[in-house]
Length: 437
Image (cartoon, rainbow, N blue to C red; front, side, top):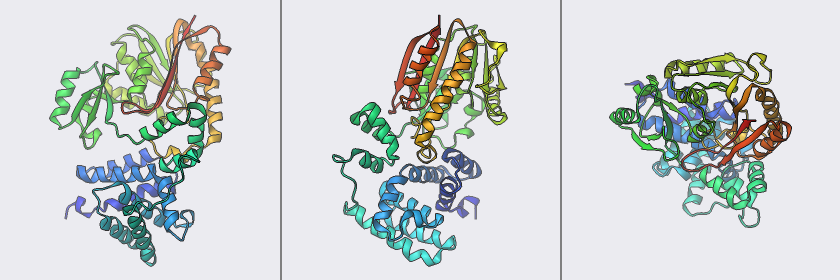
C-alpha cells in the first residue's frame, strides 16, 4: 500500500482546523506545513485538503450560525474535535457540489469514531442529515437584509459584524456589499517575472511545459496570473528564481515610487521581501536596496528570497523600524514603508484574520504606523520619495494617517494616493506616495 493510500484527507483537514481554531495557528502557515509534509499526495487530494480547510475557516461564522439552528448543543459548547468535524461537514454539504451528501455525513461519523468520540456518532449524523435536508429544501433561515444589513452581511459573508459596520460607515452599504461579494471571487495566483533572470516569453514557455495556464496582467507589465499548478514550490522556475509570487496591488505600490537605476532604497518593514526585491529588479543591477525587518526569522526569510532570486544589489538587516538610524538620515532616494496593519484587504488569502483581528487593535496599529512614519521619513533625501502602504481597507489606518503625516511633516508633498478594493485582479491595498520638497 502506498503512503498516499493510507492518508485520510478529512483527517488532515481536521488537524488544520484544530491548529487554527483551538491552538491559534495561522491558516496559511498551518496549511503550508501540511502540504509540505504531504507532498507525495496527488494534485486532486492536495486541492481537496486546501479547499475544505480554507473554505471551512472562510465560512465559519455562517457555518456556526447554521449549526446552531439544527443542534441542541450550541457550537460554543461542543468539544473542539466534534465542532471542527461538523463545521467541515456543513461546508461540504453547502459549498462542495462534487461531494455527495452521503459521503460528507458518513465520513464525518467515521472521523468522530476514529478520534475517540464513538458515543457522539448519532449526534454528528443527526445534525448533518438535518442540515442536508434543510439545504436541499432551502429551509435555512438567514437574517433579513433590508432591516439589518450589518447582521445579514456578517452571517451571509461570514464576517465579524464590526468589520461590516466599519466598512458601511466608511464606504457605504453598496460598496461594502461589493467588497464582501468579491471576497469570494477566486483569483489565479499573481506572479512577477524576474526580468534579471529571464523574459516573459521564456517564462511563459517554461510554465506551459508544466501544464500551467498563464495569463498576462493588464495592470502591471511584469505580472502574470497562473493556474493549474499543483505544488508551487516544486516548480523548477520557482526554485531558479525566475518569478516571485506577489499580488498585483503590491507591485503597483512599488511602481508608484518611480524607482530608477542608481537609486538608493530602503524598505523598513520588508519581510518576506517582495517589494524590496521588485525595487532591486527595477534598479537593473545598479544602486542598492536594503531590506529591513524586526526579527532574525523575518530577515532570514528575506535573505532566502534574495538568494533564490539572485539579487546582486541588495542586502537584509535586522532593525526595529521605530528606532532611528542616524547613519542613513537624508541618504535614501526611496523609502518603502509597508507598515503593520489589520489586513482587512487580504481576508481572501488569510481567512483567519476574521478571528485573530480585534476592533480595539485598529487604533493601536494606526498609532504604530504614525510612530514608524515619524522615524523613517528622515531617511528620505531632498527630492526623494516615501511610499506608505498597507494591505487593509480602513480609513483610520490609511487616509487618516496620510492626512496626519502631511499635517505634521509639511516638507513632504502628496504625489499619489490610492485605495484598491478587493476584486478579481488584486487584493485590497492602500498606498500613498510622498515627495520630499
